[in-house]
Image (cartoon, rainbow, N blue to C red; front, side, top):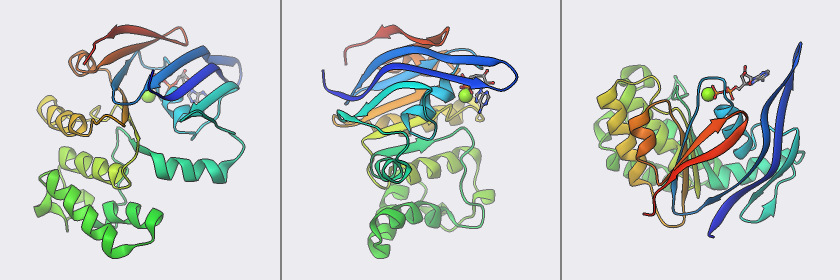
Length: 228
Ligand code: ADP
Ligand code: MG
């Protein structure tokens, strides 16, 4: 298997008043070149799971391997680098910086990694063009529609050409037609060396994936695996 991310015996619990075990002994490997959807009711642990994959949160126990390298969850500096280099993240709310234009939002993410402003601007313009949003380059997030803003958020997530794209209910706040457009853009990003995982509540979008996973009782079950 062409695995890119592997999880072994992952547990995650939160202890507020009462201990809540959200993820229970997850063992799973994600292959490159595939798109996975993740479904499950609200509160089932989808976001917790994605946050562990992106190393934003750490598991209570268990291990995560990216490209067969064991992640040390206590090494934040290294993990920030791995995340910046390899992982593009898209949230339900686009999280664009409100005081920066669409172009700035995208190119700053490139600049942060490469330090090359001219090249980052060039790349950002190219990606924004591919998204069909060249005319919106100089607009601020508040001047974009929900679908446009989410496409800019995708552009920002991919400027560093990540091997992994994680999207947590990326169209959760959009109407169906706009959501379709956003998924079209997301699916265009599929390539043989890339892994894409998205959480969604929408059955139709979930069924488009090569492999559909469901979060049940803190574990991941494969619902169907299409061979594409
Ligand atoms: P989903 O994304 O599937 O809706 P989440 O991963 O957001 O589910 O949440 C799973 C469970 O973990 C929920 O019961 C939620 O309340 C709880 N949870 C998530 N994050 C925290 C946290 N930081 N502290 C305490 N409980 C949390
Ligand atoms: Mg969630």
